[in-house]
Length: 117
Image (tube, rainbow, N blue to C red; front, side, top):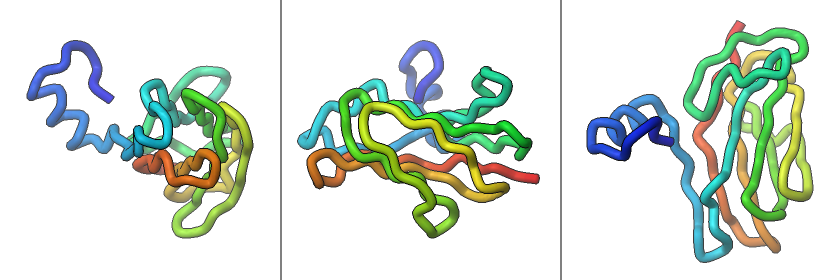
């Protein structure tokens, strides 16, 4: 994700901060995909971010079209959802990422959100 104008510097900054995901657009268009951390109803971090663990912290996933969503903590799948979006409560600190499939085909793989003490 690039904030503001799409320049070479902005692209390098987004890459350095880990604000990216890989998508197979031959499966479905991935534009609009979102994975973010939310606390008290407000975004507190996006892909690549480090966020503080707190009760009530939620991870939100939005797909541009319906699919199967898998939430991974460290190296283990911890939750699943069907459809276009999902809310997940993280199981404490860890490295959380999303995998999405569509009709059984690999579609989107996110970089993680780092939930820390």
